[in-house]
Image 1: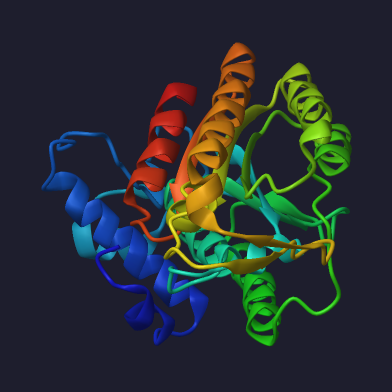
Image 2: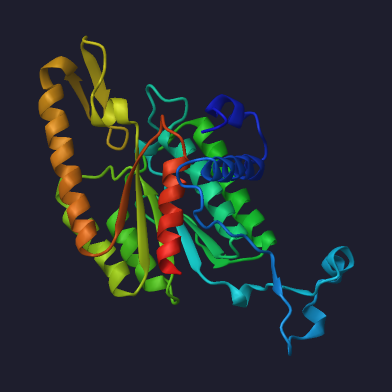
Length: 306
């Protein structure tokens, strides 16, 4: 992140943070080895013979002496939905400045802002073991503000702590989303995939359901790399608590670290392979890292969709 989490947290509202993240990302993109990557944003399109004159933006004409037509919702190229995991496990942090949920909200806001600048219609679906709200995809600025208001509400809940335990129920939620979306869409899922291993086949089945319904899928697996993937704690005894069930376990990290890392790597590999088989993009995101690579992964997906 060009702005660190502490500085970003001082920017309010969320929309301002999202804009700063995206503008920093785009600025860095053009100074990086990715220079030349197409990031074209247009609020208007050139006037074509036969267009209704009532849609001409006369303010732009006054400045440029060229005719441009305002783009409207029905002209959007893509409908995209952000599925945001808000379950109790997303409240975890140890080494990172932000919890997985706060990171996911800020990343999601930046992603939605980037989509809006590309004139795509955006929607939001926060979930735990059920859909908590459903905001349909639209491309107007006022609609984006509505989505940011919902995300701001989630930030306030995050500040108050997890409260009642909310389990992750990705599979049933994704099945329901697959049935509710009537138009072909890009479904972006931000989650820590924290649910029982024996339910992962059900999760893959749900993702296949989305693909069967002709939706594109981009899954961001948000975790704190150092603690959750590497178990890289100082060598002393810890009492670990499952934030979704309350189950506790005493662990000496040094004794189990290598076996733990091996099992996490094996599971992640199996999941990636299953996603790849069904053309589902899977990206690992570390909450101690920049948003840039995750935003670039979205742009690559967007580019492939045309």
